[in-house]
Image (cartoon, rainbow, N blue to C red; front, side):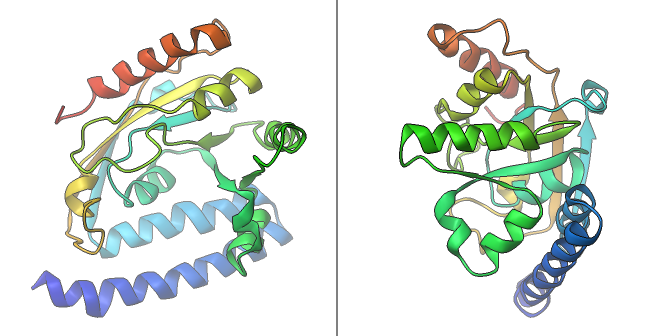
Length: 238
């Protein structure tokens, strides 16, 4: 019975409410501020879509987030549904890292810029430094950035090898890393077939932050391994 609901109700509603919440986010960001705009376009949007899926999300470790602190949030990546879970339940003002090319896409680029997402230009060293300086200005007073260190979704749910980007940014900006473990989303929207949507339960474990200040470029591998072990410790399937 869920099959017709998915195609006749959920996906059409997802398309419509994404458009509506996107407009609300842009308007509120322009009239009030980006933080409130991101709340409507991120938190409310995510929770509404989880409600109509339906998916129940539980969270552990909120006490590990210090009010007003900014983080490089590093979660495992099992599913496209991770975006709803992170946006809706992490309890942080979130910015996403986006390639500069996405800024040229009508609607997407304008809306993302309005709510304060960070565009990275990797074309040359000067552009990369400028992008980093812009990121530094936006990641203040509790605004945090989310980077999936695996770089892509894990089809099995097991952790894939980590890439250096999130850890390089933590070192460059001097921000602590916030490891996050997500369970359950691979059964809701599998990486092998994102259209195979099912209702279910997901859980989020917010681990203790790991300061990046004690590490250097030469010891980045140690930092990556430490974060990976922490995230893996919370996985229900390893």
